[in-house]
Image 1 (cartoon, rainbow, N blue to C red):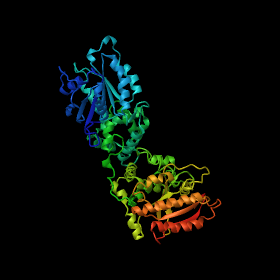
Image 2 (spheres, rainbow, N blue to C red):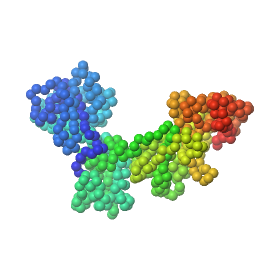
Image 3 (tube, helix red, strand yellow):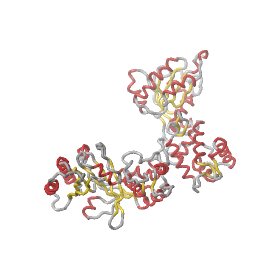
Image 4 (tube, helix red, strand yellow):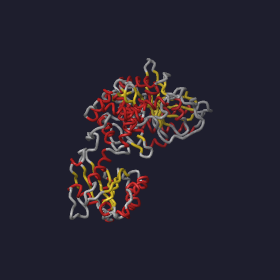
Length: 587
């Protein structure tokens, strides 16, 4: 991999907007005019209109619009608006006025942070021809402390509009900082590739390793070069690339070719040498954007569905996931441990199951590993909650077919209930109930976690998902969604709140009358909402903590409540409510 030209493609920005700011008299307008017209102006207005630089001025041939600004107090609002719309900011100081350099760290850079302008900053010392050479110090010596404090500074450069010194370079560096930013790729402090960059490059490496031998052969390296840079590598160039790697990193090359370690080393080397365009060209050729995620055109298009339709994996996608599970179950124990799971997602921007709602949502076996059923359950949950993100992660781990072939939109629940039949494989149960009723314990029990003695109130929705065996031998996936009591009012503001619900469960502490009363109140509230919005759902009342002394008239009251609820909801004799009293303490 010898690098190459950096022609911008569809995944890179189509235009760059550079805002020039700094103290009055630091040379902002002269810098812009001279760069655009290639002639130093005799008369410069206080503030220039937006100025477009010639497209052929830089190799990427991406249009650059430069915005001049005024530092006067009366224009402070307009200045803030311009800065907030910038792709990059050029901050100027005058080389002959040290006070303007001080103002960068005392005013301008803190002001950018206050305005939350998070774009690359190029610091430019103008009027280089006027600096007193008797007091000259190196640019590195002057700027190093400022760059340590303000990591958003991409580059520092000095120039002279009058003598035409380094003018194109100013805007080249600004454009380059937008098209080929350092921050997503490289940690300047640690001097290493950033994790998300490593993950993307690993995925690219695997896609190019056609024979799956863990190395890029000469032919695979050449194919990679042609795909990314539209030019083949000569045999001598391939030898040269491998020699450079082997001299610095012996494990970077083996008998089969360039290893992943060597591939990553080369990209770190390009970046350290300032050739970020090489790595960005590779990333963009494989569909990555500036956040090092796949661009929208690589992903699932928006899904059209009604609120009571859900999204599931197709059988093709499930079979793909079964193969992935088998591939990454290195020790063959039928479970993915934490290391194996991290390895599986090492080609995604991050492990999507490391945080809520997916962390600990599925059953783990005694070895603290995720079984195949648990693995598929997590995917079912992800696809149900966020199909686009779910399919995106399928692509990251190797799904190569059309993204739309991975999912299917199910029939409307309303139709399923009318026909009393559903061909869905994933069902969702909303779990309601008062505080300390045992809702969380119900979820824990469902995924095999032990009973916890201490009470921790649930403040946010949580999920538990597992596979349920059917009498006919088939398997269905059930998702339990626990909704805290305080969140119910907010939930029911939405007309479609119950559209995705297949059954509502109401849990109460069987030893407390108040818990029973509150559970039935919630049942009436949910049932009434379902009736009024057209999303009627079957309801199940569950008495938890059956090992404690029961509230004496609970069963009698439950029967009375059952008829009252049915009457209020207008369900008649549909049998929508059931009283279940066999959960116990869920141990």
